[in-house]
Length: 442
Image (tube, rainbow, N blue to C red; front, side):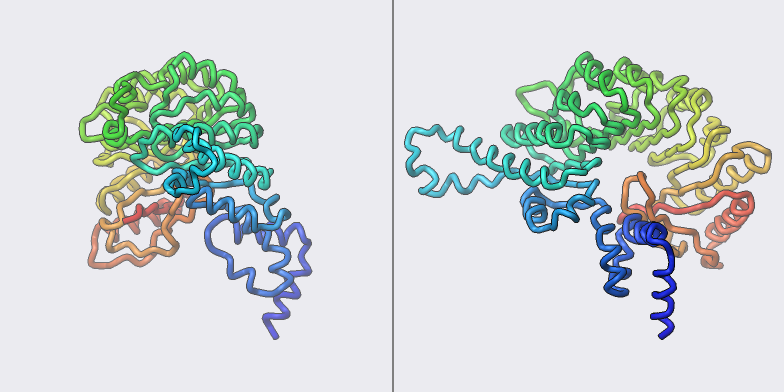
């Protein structure tokens, strides 16, 4: 009876407020679906918000089936799609009936016909989901087929036709042979994430990006070992200069967010995190978010350049993530600036976590970093056995509203480092700074 009364009181709230509650419960994380089982009325009002999450598909076949079987009013709620593009099944070519009535058709033409049929099906399905603003396209690793590369290039061209008003495009996988000319059609694009090595020249890239007047967020990722192992023996794509050079970056006058993620063999040069690219970020008045995810620690010269960037740009959100990050680097290189509001930083163990948190507390006590509101410690799962979690680990890449781990108030009393971290956390909370954890997947 009490439950029924609470539900009745809930429906006394205005519909606009109830929908805000549904959206917070269902869209901000992968949880909250139990809410839909509360009663029929809540299910009827809240069901549409499930479709406002990122809808993820393992293949274009799965997407085609879903689009065909989902009511159009629910498809209108979808704004964010993540699609893994799989190679086309060529086994029908082996069937005898595939060649029946086509004795003069070249085998190559028949093969591409299958790809064209797949593109036509995908186009039809995409048109059924008309309000998409964010798309992630994923490709499998170590995919070298020429036909597959052409197929993916055609998928990207298809997106520019179906979604000319797209705001956010993310290419995740092995786009090591992909040109960027297709971007020219996305005149409303605000954010672009690229994982790979562009086939476009720096001059062409300048022309393309200079026409994207609204582009303000750029994320570049590179897996150098994978790039080297999958390089085409008939091209020099693994050796030529990458497209996003300093001159290219300087054309992006409205750049507000820049992310670099590079996983390279030890002591191997980076593709995007170079002094030339970093120098192009100096005195960027619009730049307020900088994220660095590297395999190796930057050298002293690079750290000094990073210090200058932070000094001259109003960066509010800073992510520092590389193996072997020294806790003292924040103070020694003056990486804690007056504009900083959110700091993500990698820690190896609880001793490093304490040293970082305590140095932040000392800066705050001294009257510096007055705007800092949150510190997120990036930790490997196996190194923090004494820290208890109060929330699920974060699963996403840093954007949006992730579920972060809050630090438990009662760590193992036999673990002095854990106790020190708890003390530092309490002190920072008293200073108005919240501490959270991002635990990497094992």
